[in-house]
Length: 414
Image (cartoon, rainbow, N blue to C red; front, side, top):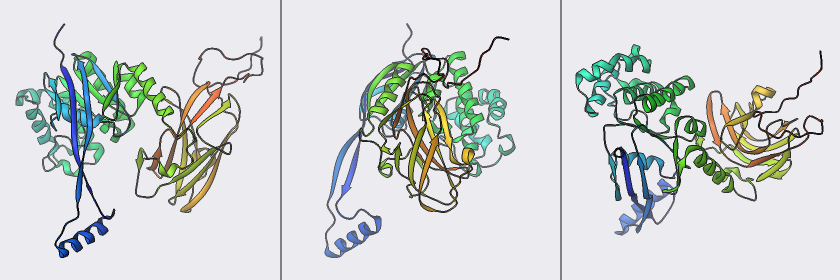
């Protein structure tokens, strides 16, 4: 058997975190420091050692695609930065055999003052490719990125989407032995995201390159990766077949919720937010705090929300199944024509006449939207357990999985 392309042994990365006594706000801290300077003394500071990664070990061989999953702050991006040689490990070592192309954030490896054309050659040179090799791939890169019109414009004038298009095209087409991609692809539009995933599949399976991919989208992880690594607080919790690891991750997400319910949503950390204003304040299901709530297939569902909204907000509630796939959405504007045109506190009730989805556990996500901007996104605020029932009134239960939704039909002999 050939040598591993990536070999990670007992890898660790620690940081020193400084804590300063005194006020929490910048203005208060500055005034205290100035007062202390006038008195001839300084505020006492303390340091704390924080391990972002600890005892990480795994191997990857040529052509393997590894998905890395975990909550925000689990150490996923830190691991990719160590493997990309952006930062050095504190303990252990990582051996990579071959050229590495990394796409960790918008514009990784680009110089903002150079044009798109110049940055293609710059990135190729960084990867160790000759000018002739870059020229051979140049037209393919430009066609894939769809930025030909702006190729001779400095990339500092590119939108974030254009930046990602060109950066991914360069990283994927200049034939690296190892391709490392973080969640940055979420910046692009849906069509381009699909295009990138298709290219990564071609790179891994057709060209036998090794790919490391970080994403919060479990559908993408399962469609692209044969193997997954689940990180939690900087340590490996699970390493194995993608479906098994994803199932363990989603089960952990459900179990780690507050068993008393998610009444105070304002204390939850949003997956995505815009501005300092917290939108979602509380949620109740059938008048009760939302922890794990059971409802039978075909029964009605009532969700009550308390919000503090900006002007022009509409609200979406999404149910995801145990694999993390979105199954159904309840959208205030699309389904009821309801948009909150007045800013401030408001109470909403979402009534679902019949929940005709396959029995199982469904996690709830909440999203507040203004125009095309996501103002706040909260994931896994509670769980709805959908129980089996005689939904069709035939005296029989559905016993095997025929789909994600259950739709009634009428049969007759003709």
